[in-house]
Image (cartoon, rainbow, N blue to C red; front, side):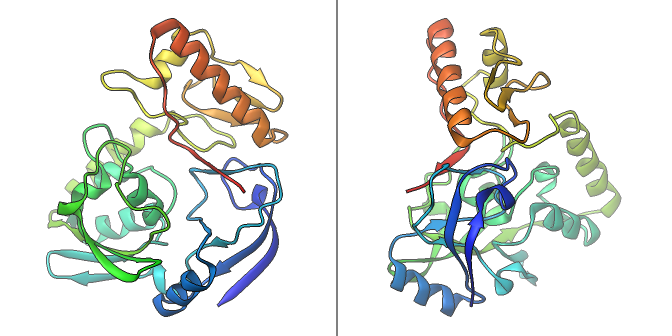
Length: 279
């Protein structure tokens, strides 16, 4: 098992800010992971770093990031068994090449499978857990299997218990014509191509029922507003862009301002989709 000390959160998250992390552990297999969880008891979980923002403080709580065993894709009856550390881009490409349909709607969504599963990433109409039969997880009680039929998951919510690390997922997919899959993948990529560029964590807020968070933020007159090195994107108001100098404090203050302004104008309380973690 690899252990890395004094890691800058700037270097391992897509928004490029935050403090220094004392220790990151990278267990290479499920046995190492289980032993580590039992030893540490309290920890942060890090996937691809696309939806995570660390505080500006020194992070003394250990961080766990999955290693080599969890980057595999294998064929099983009715679909695939996929490691949680597999990047979504790689998984969608694998399915396209092998004529497996069901994940096209995840095209263009960054990060790793584990993080996508934990928050049930996808579209308002369909989340990644809709194509999953079961999850293999490790927690304080050891290894176990979670069946999606037992989870009360929904839009941007996976119903995964805290301190539970997803290690593998069994996906139920259908054989289809590769050209048809590729066409659907390209359609989703085109839809997401116009998303803002620059350092960000993707969508900051969940869409309230029947509303688009970006539209509400724009109508509240907040496009382009800046605090320190953080600003609301002029392209899509549900994105906060770091110009390279933003602190997590800048971003948190901007999030607070957005919530206050939208609630004041529309009476709607926005809920963060990004996860800010620290002490």
